[in-house]
Length: 225
Length: 225
Image (cartoon, rainbow over all chains, first blue to last red; front, side):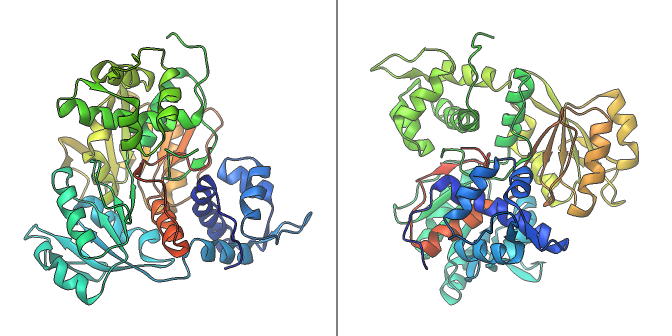
């Protein structure tokens, strides 16, 4: 791993956006991509794109742009998407199902190793080929195939209990979709997503008659700037 | 509307986080809240909280903290949540259903005025009391009760077509959950959410052995810092 340089959190948050845009460009047959192109698609300015990418090493060629596939590979590696991140999702309601089916949750490094719920009509069914088990089995199943990441997609009322059990069973990180502030031990990485935050950002701009940055894209780190 | 001062985009992205934390504090009976408390919960430092809130006017009292309910009201007003934002959701699969049921999508200013899908097993059913109609009816239904915001929760392949129809039918803003970069006319506000971005931020930190800012919370504006 070459750079000892610490990548700023705001850059970390933009890398997945570049990754997704590059994936789309590569799939559509693009061989090269300019920082201007990426900037327009990501809704940031080109100098910021160049600065962000400079943290990955210097491999852009002035004038001819970046090799799209190579850059994609570099970003994948930087994001750790070349590694295996087994993941357990607890709460297989509509959101849990949507997450289990989301392309970003089942590819690019992530692998669903456990789905858990308490609803008897859901336990025993399969989502994308993976058996949904009762939460009572969580510790036993996790001991066999330990997930690195636990995803909490339960109702708010049980989110903390579920988080505690996932942490006790050894996950290194939690991704929380429940509308509840969770507490976890310091060594566990916690990230939370509130699906309605972008809606409120829209409401802000509509009510103020202001414009938001064009095509801003992503669910990430509102608290960092 | 008092302040002519333009609120920075990063502050706009944090207001919904403060809003959600305050809502939880007020519900749990808290009368006042300190900037330190809010800062810890939001995973930012206290001086940033104070600076963010200063854009709303000066109503914190040094030493005794903020009146929680008053501050919540101020943030609601700033975010435009005291207004009515009718909203149409297109794509009533697992994600669309999860969104329609999410507390943030049906309260605090937002009102679902239309749900649309093409699946015959879904069209005609009700989600949270709202009838799901066929997308063929979109223009007619929207002419009767025009939504300000269109939410795209369709598969990627049809997202642009759906966006075009929502724009043609008069929405002022689009919130896109489909994994596809959309293009819209300049006057239409576009925000996109990728549910897997936080997962990639987690993967970055796990693979680098670094820690992310504690309890960062929210789906917002990765491209802005």
